[in-house]
Image (cartoon, rainbow, N blue to C red):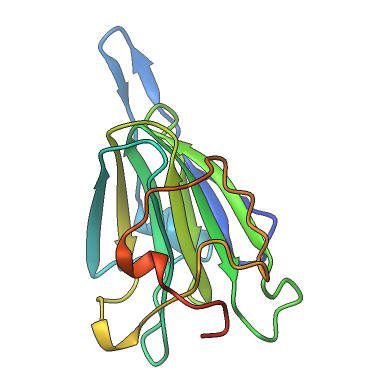
Length: 176
């Protein structure tokens, strides 16, 4: 695996090292020793999957508050997404800045998003599926969100008029 620091401190792009032959390919997507050496978590007590039927579906912006903030290792296992992280760490020099990266099933790339970031994604293809490994178990009482198009963040989403859940459509601007 190859670990590359992204534009915002703490974000890490994880690329696989696929062994290819006529049958396809084989690759490790997680190795505790390699993750530890890269300074990333080695325990993920919860995994989630999000299937999205239509191109343009947008989920986010979400995070989990203290005392159980969560980091996420996000991978697109079918289709393609623009994965976005927003720095919500008040003492960070990149506070309220965002970073986006395209993740596809073809490249098997992942993005590690540490605690202290909001997360969202928009599907770039029909029938896109996203697999998350979470550093904390989900706590409804600590679930938070901000408006996907909050002008404080200025995220450049690729598809106008996204498909949103009622909850995501009614989140307030940040800070809530």
